[in-house]
Length: 285
Length: 285
Image (cartoon, rainbow over all chains, first blue to last red; front, side, top):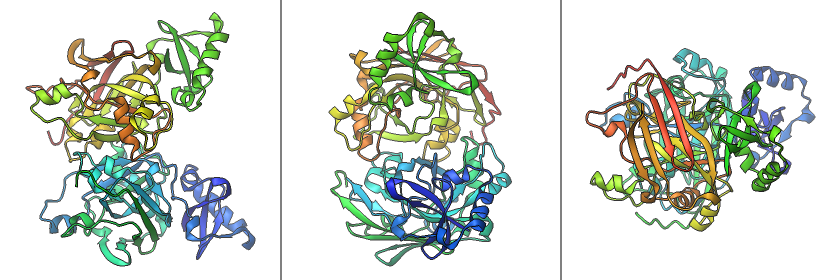
């Protein structure tokens, strides 16, 4: 099944079950993270679905999709994780995952406009993201695999000028409202195999990878992270991006005001975000 | 005045006003962060103090101090920020602050034991930390200065083996329960000048710096961070550490099981934490 977080009136949100094209059944939780915090969440969804009449469903345009996990306690990202891309760049496969953190404030919905202030080098990173479904601390890989609630689509949009100001990437990765996520979480029980991840700028395919080539797959990443910090239901782990980012092009290419970034994973869904780039002048280009 | 977060029965916490040596007046908020979320927090404290009888105060040993901000939404750290230390190392002063993020799970109380699993290179970083008192987004330095609620003591304890596994420091900085913070927040209105920051291992002075030599002072840091992400009441910004960390010694020196790390800032207070280091074998030394 596919779960989403919908915007409601009064600036609220609700978790919902996708029941058809743009059609959802609202669930008794304020977002998908709050739903997953109930260990019986699968039962909650099943019972809501069984009890629902047609009149209980709502038709919601893409603009009604909130960030899937608007209150995620942790959003942890992995860099340099697509083996084929690393090897084509002539580098060795890493022994450990390169990890960095961002906050839930970075997240935006699947068709929200992304407003960027003060960066002239806005780049894309299409990614598969893993949604944590149970508490994990110092967990083995098998246990971590069982704790995966599902998968979603994200774009770890990166302000390369800020990212490269210092050795630590955080400031270029943590701009509020710049990481699209959604449109839905596909539950892990419906996943059998790898995902095709694609990124497009104004309809042109710029990134394409298969998660089968990840050096650190979802369960391994969750297990590794849990060796030092507790993961909880509703936390989000981004698995890294395949080749084709703008910074790696010759000449480098970045998003312009008005560009549309599309991020798509077969079987999960698609993000489509227009960029509003304010004051793009970069002090240290 | 000095504010603290105390442990209560039933694994709860309460904000409190320090009224004497180990003596506190509990306040109507679950921790200092929740107190600061009320824009009228100064009035709340004054009124509680005015109405209090002697019987309302509690005597609390150091072990009763919870992490000052147990639910901080953001804990953002600055590295490489003491100008005298940077210059003595022969480096140039940085143009931009080096920033990285951690989560509230890393925080522990002023006299809590610090339990570390799986690192053999546990190092110290005594730091002044700034507590945010108002929402800041794209704020100028003057506005950021006004938004400082107060100052506290922290130690950005770092697992150097994990920190140096990859280019991004996060995994070595984000071990749960390894960043002591407290014992109190000294409110900004009582601060006039710079702070002396000291770190000791088993009573031996190993670090000493003066915050007057910070390249990026508290207000500048908050303003800079707010250009990309919103800071809110109860968020915590660590300002960096002076020279004298174990990694920089010849030979390098790290904490051993049973060592006591003391972190002290004149006028604010002192952290004293015993280290319990489990399975210290480092795979890649």
